Amino acid sequence: MHQAKTKASAEALLALDRAHAWHPYGSISAQQPLFPVRSASGCRIKLADGRELVDGMASWWSAIHGYNHPALNAAIGEQLTDMAHVMFGGLTHEPAARLCATLAALTPTGLDRVFLSDSGSVSVEVAIKMALQFQQARGKPEKHRLLALRGGYHGDTLGAMSVCDPVTGMHQLFANTLPQQLFAEKPRCRFGQPATDADMANITNLIKQHHHEMAAVIIEPIVQGAGGMYFYSADYLAKLHAVCQQYDVLLIADEVATGFGRTGKLFACEHAGISPDILCLGKALTGGMMTLAATLCTDIIARTICDHAPGAFMHGPTFMGNPLACATALCSIELLLQSDWPANIQRIAQQLQQGLAPAADIVGVADVRTLGAIGVIELEQPVDMMQWQPALVDAGVWVRPFGKLVYVMPPYIISNDELDRLCHAMVSVTRQQLEQR
Ligand SMILES: *Cc1c(COP(=O)(O)O)cnc(C)c1O
Image 1 (tube, protein in one colour):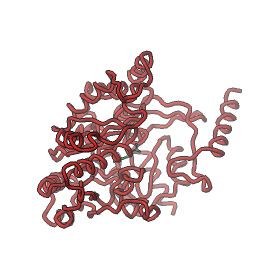
Image 2 (cartoon, rainbow, N blue to C red; image 1 turned 90 degrees about the vertical axis):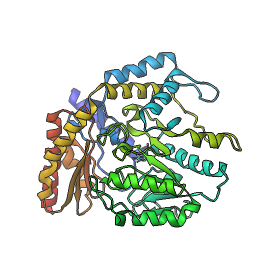
Image 3 (cartoon, rainbow, N blue to C red; image 1 turned 45 degrees about the vertical axis):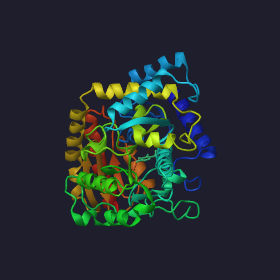
Image 4 (cartoon, rainbow, N blue to C red; image 1 turned 135 degrees about the vertical axis):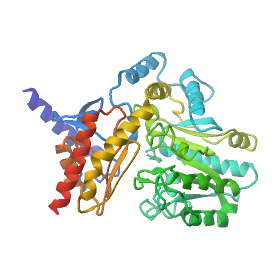
């Protein structure tokens, strides 16, 4: 009886969804497989049909402490008894003020001013506006363009889209609307390798040629995420930072995906020992509980903007500094810092490396790579989601491939057994899918 009722309600839910909801990058015509979730706890996602999946996605890099964590739940509950939200214009409160101070202290030196917003894309918009307003304030309005890397991803809003990869991004579709930015080749030197003069030549030349019209360079440090799950040289990043300084161009580090330990350092910039001028944070900021993002900048940038007309930074989201989100972020950061997270990321890194290695021998696999708590199987051809997604679910894991990439970045609390299941499922489904063709 209970089974039947559950099944019917899952079907009803699917029907409602199919009738009215839109999903990320979704088509309402070509329907993709869709799995109703009943609940999620720890590193497990429980489907409405009773199946339990080991989670390899951390809900797009964010749920680093897993789901339904008692401390995070309690942090929201406690804040709720004070207030869910008040406007941040003219008012302040402990969660926001403490969070800004905490982020300033944790991030690379010099990033002392924090602008809170609602999502990673908005944190990138804010970063771009900071760079532009800074250049205007110091009397260099001609420095208004950005330079980004091919293969990058910075979000889905218009400004952020303009700096995403020009081929895989949405430039063609919105070409008449998007600002025309500059693009450097994707770094060829991989993580762990030095960056030679040849590796630096393209981006250095672009900066040399265009610095007079360039406000900032924006990059994802070390890991290009949604644009290709690609890991590049820390030496490249360090050298790029030096070139930016030499030519009076700001460096914006988009750590929306890499922030909070994912790559083995608290922030990926630390691999190169650099402090960017502007830093974007999001995704794991609240441990995947609430939507919140932050853009940090140096004191010089903040003061220059505010000491010139119009005398303020021109941005102000309605839900800025949402107390529930800020209290949750403080709790998530405390949970992370209390744990021996470097050793834990190391543990996950080793298991991913060992567990995914057998995939390298499968015909049709182009590359297998890992860095920190990120594991990637890159294929020669894009996956067919109609086939792959159900096969992965049948194998007991929640892994969501895109394009040629079958990848995971699991919650940090994942056990060795669960990691084993995850890697085993990824390799066996890859083998099964590629050998079928
Ligand atoms: C996900 C992501 C964004 C966009 O964040 P949203 O919260 O989806 O708006 C921006 N930059 C990077 C590097 C990301 O991975």
